[in-house]
Image (cartoon, rainbow, N blue to C red; front, side, top):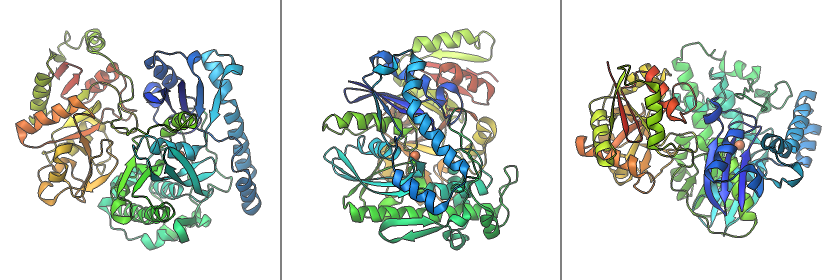
Length: 580
Ligand SMILES: [Fe+2]
């Protein structure tokens, strides 16, 4: 049975391909169309995913679409009666409903199929989030929670995962949303692009949470893990703003009202410098978010008293809060799938469709490498066609022996070079995890500024993350657990902070990726080689891009290498060294 799961006409559109329940490919459209967080229809992701399955669109048995059809009508009607939103919001509902209904037609039109033969299964947004976490967790029994901005009129959902079945037992409905709360303050702080919340999370440790009392006015915690927003501070429910998801980069107008400006003063404009007041507000929103999220999760545990938590939704990308879940709730183990945001609903919809046909084993997702790959010959052709060697811009060494490749690359890193590392299958989810990564020596204090200024051209406050051999987690981090997806932040041991200063954030924390031989053998071998040469089993790892989606093809990697100040590019066995 061939299932294609889709997230379409939302942010971060994506596709996942399952054959007989086995994940074959999971891909985000942004990597192909080169527009970050792109909305619309993920036609390239579908096409490439099916190619990897050796199939065509005509072979697909079920198209699992992460969208509810005619769901929560009672709640929607009640909201309309009690809040009287403007006609624009009602118009948006109607447009969304029309788009949902027409997705099978879009599939038919795009791939030249007979629409009457398309089997479409609509999986509501939140159940798709929950399925994406539960069915990849390797856990039989777990509490499953999704927290996000909104999807299908819901912003929080709680489910019991039991022996391969997911039963949703509670929801928080529009207009109340913890994701919207974080978004509002992100926009207030002048970060206006879709998905900019992570910048606030990076800024927070520089500040002091002086505005917690003020921001607590926006979110009221209710009994049993509930909460409500004080809607006076928000505009998303009034019908005054329009969000579009039909194509291009999503653009969400400011969701906060003038009441927030009365409370905090004027917001930061995007070009203003980031000052201490912004740092303090960032620290405060992170703190209020954490208090509310742990309140929701404790409430979830009271309803589903399991040791295990499967967590999804855009808020599950808050890696700082994620690393504190075990300390602040009764949960003892936490599983978060690498595409916890809306991209992951494509995978969740596909898994929901598969598990609906029976009760099956739940394997644990051990790695995120579900994307495209290019072999050594294809990479060699790209290098040859670019003529970089003939033009004297780079030297080329090809090292088919993996040990030699890793030793040479590790030596280049230890000498202070910044290395582009393009290997194997592309990552699924927002993080580069050692296959489309830029790597550097974490021991150099100045490395963070060098990369920010020469390669990534980004804000000084954004941290870089460590990749560490799984065997060495306890030696470097406090109370951390193996996390191949870099989605939980933990304190770096105080005595190690000066050993790896480039990946230790200002508050002494690090968002680690732990690497095993099973999850990524070549990357593990590279870090091991670096450890042998330096004594440190850690590399600085940041995504291979420069103000663009992560590179997908060798051409894009080579282009990024040439237009930035990167020193070395390793693609497959081929090592290019820039001539200075
Ligand atoms: Fe979502």
